[in-house]
Length: 465
Image (cartoon, rainbow, N blue to C red):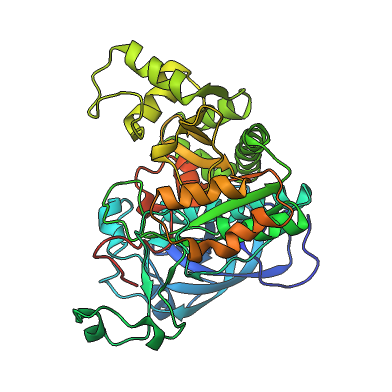
């Protein structure tokens, strides 16, 4: 590509451009500056890619020493000059500067002076950590994955649905929800209880834990739909796998059973991985070298593998048969922990595995009952290195069975009258699943802590920035 007009260009584009004698402009932040008597070398980055662009400064051309003195790490600058072939290694072109303009000075207390910082340190400066190589790469991969998700479902004819963030329904039945209210705090200390009729919505309302129930209403109207939005869990957990605010991808398909659900989940994961490997090669090479050695080979193996499929009973039998001493003992009926999930995918099957037909006691009320009366048509996708990455099920489409499950779990039937109507008026088999977006990013990048794959982590006692 040859530039035929004078223009400001992003570094990602410049590094793919042929050397030209026409003047161009680039803007970004200074990473390093090496200075001598006769010239200077500035490494500039604008966030469009991992690589820096080298700027060669001939002090006979750029004569203002006061400007060069202000070219410090973190400063924002504009460089105008000629794009020429680079004699150095690592890039084909560089800019020979004719003019340098300081856009924003950066004083010596800039906290990103060093080349390497711990992730713990960078979490305390979340407003600046995006300028580092690691977090710049994370956010670019996150962006590409977000696009890939929409592309996948749009190509398959799914309708994108925006489900409510504020809801009166607890999709999981666990009660770990953030309450939304306009009532004064002292109202909640009343021994007489809370009069929600005085509240904004006239009833108890919370931030959603899932868009699934709302998605079902439109799946049973327009066919296949998907949601992609923020969800919230008031779970007091400080693990490397939990956030209080995170993003979920939730497809819902009419006229679909558990087997179609598993097929879509496998196809979906492979599509995302293939897209990232193809479109984020430079960033993924960085993760492979500096964050999680071998992650590229691991992801390629997943793309090229057939996922194992086993029942929950078979999975438990394999865990018991292994003789391994787990932190959490194994028996039929347990809700498998991460150590069990990872052992199955990493040691037993050595590839992603889909476990299905779980005990009804450990799954949500809306999951389809099997004929044995003990299990439901739930499925989880377990991936090497992280464990559960997708959870889904065939939904209960029987009106009477769903009422029985609601009553059995002590839920308030009136809260789900609208949901029951979907089974009352033209019910159909339908299924869906949820993918935790941040867990998927963790899996793809090899980042150890989920707090490091979302721009601003919301966790217990942490709501900064």
